Length: 73
Image (tube, one colour):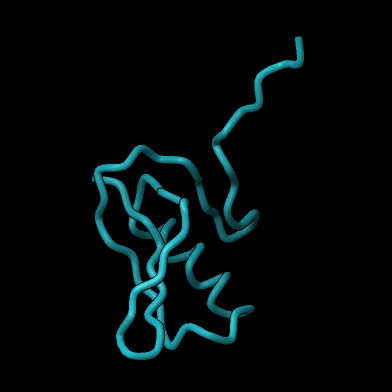
């Protein structure tokens, strides 16, 4: 199971973006990075998802996209 960052907003609304991580720790790390710079969310968490992994997160580098652009033809 993969994980996506979830932002807890006012009225217990849950917000998310297109990021999906292999581990809960990566999703929480990414959510924490964004939570510290956003003013709208009240909290953050990670939820399991079957969507494919699109990002990796490390404390040193933050969120890193796994998307590789195709060479121009």
